[in-house]
Amino acid sequence: MPSFEDHDKAGDAAEAVRRFAAAVAGRPTDRIQVRLDGENGMDQLCVAEAALSDIWPPATAKELVWLTRSGAESGARLHLQAFAADGEVLCRASFRLGGAIRGRDDVGSGPG
Image 1 (cartoon, rainbow, N blue to C red):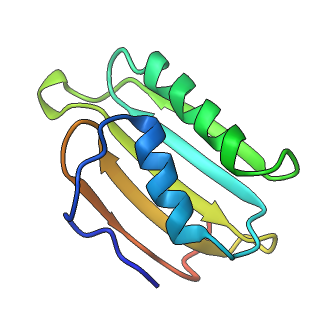
Image 2 (image 1 turned 90 degrees about the vertical axis):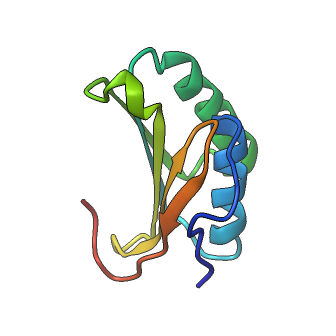
């Protein structure tokens, strides 16, 4: 599986979702989970939702969560996971919005 380790920047949530989608492409995806960790993140979460809707069909469940616990000094982080119908994690990544991408792909670690 491809890896995202510190190789680029995600200017916004839409770019992060597109890069994540490229890593998931071709895998039968039942559910996408998106968690935005950062203060004042509603705008970016809405951007992520629009990008998800453009990429994945309506039959793919989309779960969006806004976590407000992040400190302002760390910036907003977007965490994405793709799941198969049996709950297997197909791909997982974490993006610093406006900064370097950090992430990893995990298979078989289950939801959580």
